[in-house]
Length: 163
Image 1 (cartoon, helix red, strand yellow):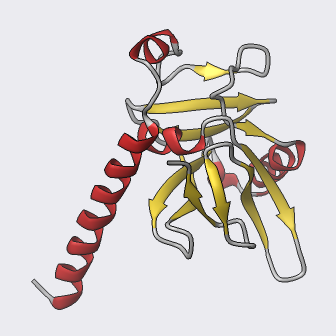
Image 2 (image 1 turned 180 degrees about the horizontal axis):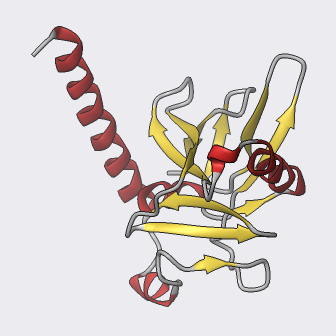
């Protein structure tokens, strides 16, 4: 194996371990609450979302619709939000466009566009709101509010979790 490959494997293992450790810190809710939550692959409309749902602003929905309309290759791609260890505050948000749904994913739908969050990341972003912002230096999807975060950097790409 090359040095880069070994380093990448070590980093992936380290980040996965850190995410699992912090997920345990956040899982203070009772098992009854988890049993009453909707199934992981169920789509949520604005009418049936609960306090743990991840919401999308109108700007976010509009930008995803624009992307679908402008690129034929978009097809049925959804916005995927995941949480990774790293960033200047301990954890960072990662956004990507994805057309696959895994068995542990939660799907949130608003006006025909979908946001996908995996189970582990969902524990870090329950009740969060995803926005699309356009600034002079960048245009990006961001997590505008996150009740699971106690702090973060000014660019809103990384955060610290509540203990």
